Length: 148
Image (cartoon, rainbow, N blue to C red; front, top):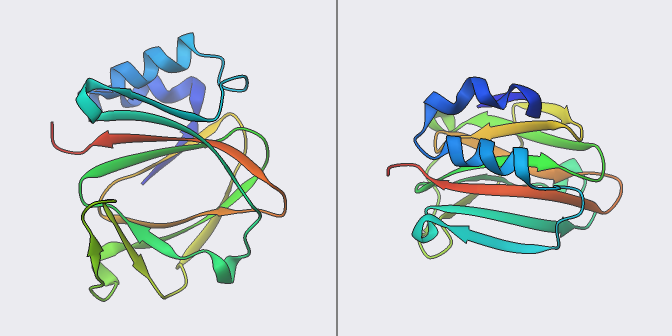
């Protein structure tokens, strides 16, 4: 997991071949004004998904992992709390291959706050519980194929 500010994203371009395109998107797009919906690039290996979610409490936020994709998550409209736990300490759970997701019925080990202007990168080994807020949340979730 990586947590930082958008202006520092350039430091992470070497982590994955498609991160350079994410950086270009950050430089060219008006993230706050983008319409809700998906922008699919690179034959589905890179997806920008502008979403809105209802408020969620810690106890409602389930840990999740993805096998095929890396998540980069950025709150756009408000403060978001997220939970984290290392995947290797969690019991195996059913995997939904169509949606590339596994859910866990256990609380996160760590909770942290992410504000607009910040991002979090979750790799397949990172279980995360996103969208813990007290108000409706607008955010950008970027999905990047882990192995391209």
